[in-house]
Length: 256
Image 1 (cartoon, rainbow, N blue to C red):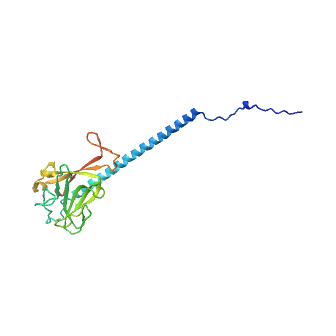
Image 2: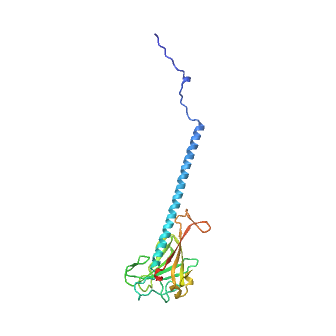
């Protein structure tokens, strides 16, 4: 019995290999580009959010550290371990005159204020610039200011210690906290019980008034370390490159 073999005509194949049409290719490319654009947008948004958060963290850290350094020395102002040891002269300038003062300062008007804090060492004190006052009854004086660092060009909070009892020559002012660009000091002047007024240094024009200061209000301005990120705003809501921090410190050695 003869066997016959049936051949399937080429045109009758049930499966055929087809390529993509030009329209399908363009649609695929478009979808791919949209996905890439979305991923890129997400990356840029996350990067900007991270930059802002990092900037905010640095500004807050600088502000917190600066205020803490100022407040810590302010709380020591007027400390006298022995009643027969007195502090140095008062003045509405930082350096000279007559009387006894725990706190002094100068009014900077459009510039920055300065602040000088004094107390008596018990032999274990350290000034704001790191000077050790290990001699009993030495007068510790720390003078704060804001200035631009000559090496970095960055404005910062600086402090100079005045070592020795005479305090005729201050030590070199050293930078404490970077990006601090403004220092404003108001003094809580209390001439009568329960009657306190916050005034600037120029209004404390007598030794008696300086001795009646019982607290200080410290305001600093911290610049953004990133020129592309301004996370703070002023009272009107306008975004600005500086943040403002304020604290009030009681001179506890004046409240005894």
